[in-house]
Image 1 (cartoon, rainbow, N blue to C red):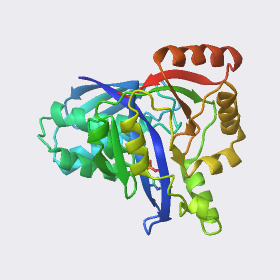
Image 2 (tube, protein in one colour):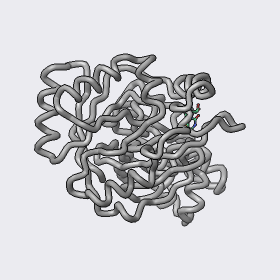
Image 3 (cartoon, helix red, strand yellow):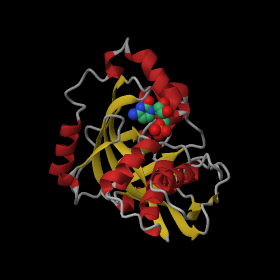
Length: 295
Ligand code: C5P
């Protein structure tokens, strides 16, 4: 069984407060994009779970997020079968685009069929939440969704069902630690209402959705917002360099996704995205550049 495992961007991400479980409550808007990994699942006799990946920075043992997803299902549903999981990576690892979370979701969805478990979406979402905050979004087969709580209370944005946006996407060759960025948010949020997300009628998910809906074909990226961007840039200045570079190319709406370091800009067409991609690749060999679309 072969599954596509897509990436996400956060068009909006407002961190609200630290929770007792050390996660953060947040308000986010997810967009699924066409950049994707492939997950190949093959049933194995016995209860063996085997993982391999073409990218050596991804663990191929019980620490792999797909391994954990398979093991969770195996135990919870008392499955007496095993699985071989091959991950073919195209989404940059640890980039803020939910690659690993999408892989885990694809594993849950695929094993539900391969092992004939017949689990409802609600049940699968329950398992997804146990694996990571971003996994639940990928269980829903939708291009746009709101995420509340830890980002795992998902509500598909039905009004944007037909909207397809084009982006230029840039990923520098650095690794950003998500827990570190959230810790930094904790130490700043008490002192700074902007970071705490207490400001702004302008940064609001409802406004964002309505602007995108009204300008479906001419949306230029108004009302994009990410609480974590300023923090990641302070620790990893290269993220700021990408933003500056995109601004110099004339892009108006540029945002970091998740805790970074991926940065995207909203562009009008595939043609424009490909033009920017060519130019950026010529100038910065260490950046991975993609022209991507809502999927
Ligand atoms: O769930 P996931 O493993 O993707 O989260 C990685 C880390 O990001 C968590 O361990 C936590 O430090 C931070 N995080 C958070 N609040 C969220 C999501 C993630 O603090 N809502």
